[in-house]
Length: 397
Image 1 (cartoon, rainbow, N blue to C red):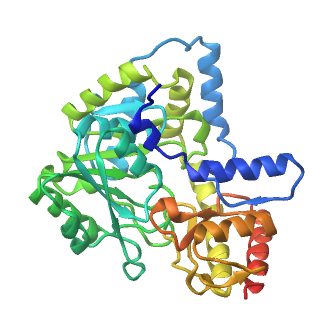
Image 2 (spheres, rainbow, N blue to C red):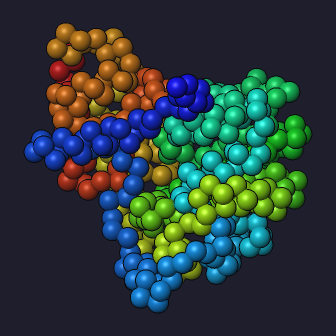
């Protein structure tokens, strides 16, 4: 039997793989510190859980419209207007089974075979695979540390071809935590309009920004870029609802309709109970977000300070999300117990095997010289894990 060549070309998620391995080691009684998971360690806030319980008790367990219930869509529109200064109608909103699903729907709605999508690296590893699933061609543009790992106009111009269909922007970024400024986004917007391109703006970490940095939706600048932008967001990161699987897209009406049609055949509606929970999250008090953000910020400061003092590695202080993107710098070429550290994959394997620390090598994120540490874990585990990483680095030869 001949299987799908496209399916065979899709790689598994290395972040989920390393997280699963760390969990299995823990289940086997091994004291492992896992820095891999891209999910808050906090429980879903009580008022959100209560909304789900009430939905169950009220029998809200049937099919809903494929693109989501109207009250949730209205709440999303209200949120986008208040937080992001962009105006949408419910017919422009498609609620899906997580932001991953929203992204996949987006690529399937706008891409034809051979269409290219510019993806600045480092990038969240699933972007490339999603573009491939939709028969598109991912065009990876490697950014520089000197520019805080953000795409410049030269980067975009050099990647542009007559097949370019879209640009993907993730701000705050996974894995770097960097945030695009208003001026940088305006340049991307002008470039997109001038070259007749779509912009997919992944804003899933928008509420997790620290210090004086501000989140800006690229669609808010003017009508031209608004009509070319698909905003991706969801409740997973900000409300500690990763397992509830609710994401959404805000898009021009024609694109939203196509996405809704695709979803209606692929998965029907997102989970009815989770939609009620998401409604409570988005329309309810945001105090829970602020409390989590305060804890993330403390961990961010601690982790960055510790990493900055370690030998052989360096990092730029993240402005958002909950990751530190660590450059192996002088560690490459060093040896640990006789084995040469040639890249982040080898580093991560040696670290897990010898110090029982699970860190994510960023080869699949477009940077094989870096690894990612998540501070969405308890401070006690952060301290223990960083002690072990420092010990590992101190034993390089």
